[in-house]
Amino acid sequence: MMRSGFAAIVGPTNSGKSSLVNALVGEKVSIVSPRPQTTYHGVRGIFTDEEAQIVFTDTPGLQNYRERVAQLLNRVTERNVSEADAVVWVFDVAEESFLKKFERLKKRVVQTPPEKTILVMNKVDKVAKPSLLPLLQRFHEMGLFRAIIPISALKRDGLKNLVDEVKRILPEGTHLFPVEMKTDRSKQFQVTEWIREQAYHRLYDELPYSLWVELESWEEEETQIKAHATIHVDGKSKKGMVIGKGGAKLKDIGSHAREGLTKKMGKKVSLFLNVHHEPEWQRDRNRLQVYLEL
Ligand SMILES: Nc1nc2c(ncn2[C@@H]2O[C@H](COP(=O)(O)OP(=O)(O)O)[C@@H](O)[C@H]2O)c(=O)[nH]1
Ligand SMILES: [Mg+2]
Image (cartoon, rainbow, N blue to C red; front, side, top):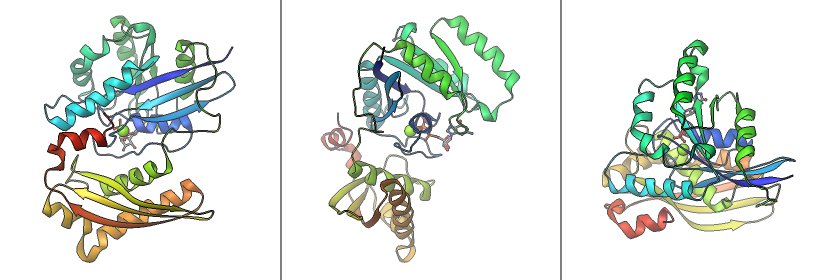
């Protein structure tokens, strides 16, 4: 019997959700960063074996801020949860405030029935094993989860346990996507994301949501891709930061994104980037909704 369905990956920001989806799929489909709030969209990573096809949906980290952007990002996540057969909560157990974060999100956890809800304790590579036991016990007693699974997305530990557990939740069904497909996102989307990821890496302290990338043109041939893209920022000073001295920062962002994309796409990728200062684009609700696909 073949099973198939959707598993939403949710949790606080920076808990390793995108890393986990990439590890499960065996390929990078979603961008990762040490900064919080990197994922904006529901990005699907597709896992297929002989028994099942699981469509894991990476989601923006849940926020308690009252800011408009945070609220819209929460909505992206909520929608993905409501469409899912299984819900996988991911927490960083190595983080000091992990239990506090859990308590804050509990009102959301209880919204899905335990039969379809799994708790993943991520980053166990950073903690001593014995300290996990009381935690496992505590979460088990809550009765909110059908399974509690310690993993390390980074070291790829415990992934099989998670996959097996999700398989048990999914309904009977055939493939939802072609077997060789790893993500529902287009190459064009990936290009803009890989640029955003590099901008995040290189502008460590300035951001978080004040930057987005728009594709201006796309030319694909058998051996190469040429893309023009614009990095939109919301402040004049930020434009300068993204460009850097003599254009050095922008060049750096472009060359690292290009390197990753060339590897990923299996053909030469050339990127042409420019930066556009757009005052307060985040306050433009319509525009944000279009960008976040709401
Ligand atoms: N040590 C360790 N670091 C991890 C693990 N999973 C993710 N990370 C790191 O945690 C940070 C946030 O990861 P990311 O996947 O972007 O988190 P997200 O915001 O939940 O999507 C990145 O620096 C990752 O490399 C893990 O299992 N162990
Ligand atoms: Mg993420």
